[in-house]
Amino acid sequence: MPDAVVIGAGPNGLVAANVLADAGWSVDVLEEQPEPGGAVRHDHGVDAAYVSDVFSAFYPLAAASPVLTALRLDRYGLRWSHAPSVLAHPLTDGSCALLDRDIDTTAASLDAFAPGDGAAWRQLHDVWESLRPDILDALFTPFPPVRATARLARRLRAAGGLRMARTLVLPVRRMGEEEFRGQGGRLLLAGNALHADLAPESAGSGGFGWLMGMLGQTYGFPVPVGGSGALTGALTRRLQAHGGRIRCGQRVERIVVRGGRAVGVRTAAGEVVARRAVLADVSVPALYGDLLDPEHLPAQLQEDLRRFQWDLATFKVDWALDGPVPWQAEQASRAGTVHLADGLDELTRFAAQIALREVPERPFLLFGQMTTADATRSPQGTESAWAYTHIPHEIGADAGDEGITGRWDSKDQELMADRVERQVERFAPGFRSLVRARRILAPPTLESLDANLCGGAINGGTSAIHQQLVFRPAPGTGRPETAVPGLFLASAGAHPGGGVHGAPGANAARAVLHRHRPPGLARAQRLLTRRDRTGTSR
Image 1 (cartoon, one colour):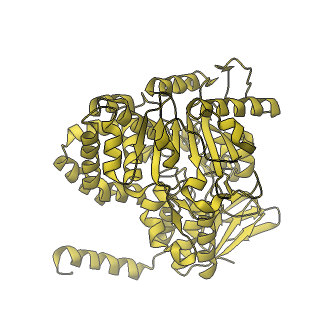
Image 2 (cartoon, rainbow, N blue to C red):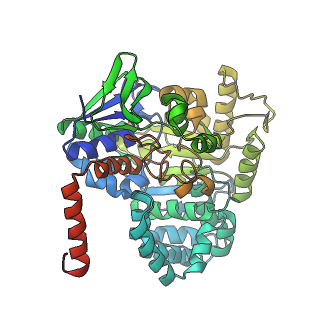
Image 3 (tube, one colour):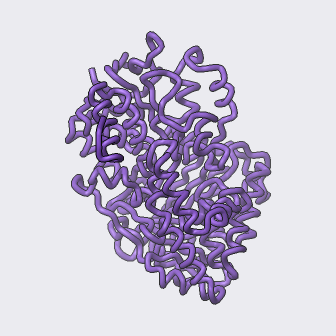
């Protein structure tokens, strides 16, 4: 009988299990799929000679995460690789905004759009450097991050106080207009904001775009050498080296609650009892709607969860290309990630069509050049590539007038994949002639490969402010503890949300360990804290 059972072997579940194993706990991780990893897996499913990341691919948050850094995954085989440049946003006129880890290169790219915009980027970067330690602390520690927030407030005052706070909550369109004279800086911010489900006119999208842009400036958008599953492999090997077990092909059907406490889980093979805790790396609707009986949940929580909002659905295409992408803008050939929208207005039109429940006519694409980022991904002179875009969960019409219905049958999939390729062709004429093979991952396919990606939602719930911080996953929560004693939420549904960084899993594991500290140890820790503050103890 293990001390803890973790439901789900995605990155958060594996991080949670590793933290518990480090504390000497015995841990069983149960995974529905035939292999661990959740949305961090790769395969050779497009072409046998090409490595394709099935879901996530670039990991700026993993590079910045103190949670993953502390696990020392390099000791378990993980190596990172970078493209020559981080991110490009080309336009159809051949101009291109470029984000590079060398700030001089980034600044020069923006100055080409409007002299002085490079200096404006440097100013935003200076603010980032002054706030970075406390922003990362606030992001990756349990909610509420009291000490990190207090330090951040002090640093914000030094960086302009309320004026800087105002800037960070602006819609990204307005932030870009205030900070930059030309399109380049505005596009870098806006494209990064749309990594989440935040429209250019959404409150807070400016702060999110700034955060992602500065993460790229500082850490790059690195990839694991050999494929995204190399990150999963390192987490798995580390856990097994510390005595943890991963059992794949084990679908959890129910969380077992006895005496008002979670005591284990039930699978098709029977019960798995946990001595101390159950941690769930599952989506919020699955945890509270499928795995728990309603009788164990407060009525107010059930009402709040009816208002839970998913992030947007995702449509993805993977390609095996016979050669490099023929970008009109040469700078795009050096970037691992490329954003494809012909200006800010096209981004706004894309977001507006989604809001109207329409399949966008010209989808905004996040395009990945994986061989450019890691030469092991495909034969020399070729490219392993992918692109994804967002679409509505419920589709009422097709803005492209091709009759895409949202049933995502083979006709829908082929029509949408062709539309994605036409969008790439606008910026890289001749792209389609290089396609050796392609694979289509429509929303139902993504969900079938990872149940947490409900309807193709990849962030565990919307990134909008009404479902963040103390509102995530429901008002008054924000922490991994649930309404059922002994049960902890360890997925992206908890603070700080989506992205591969391990914080929800680590926060859940730390909450478990805090609950099970021996009383004498807890008192000793309080005395040590008091001594650190005053130099004396009582």
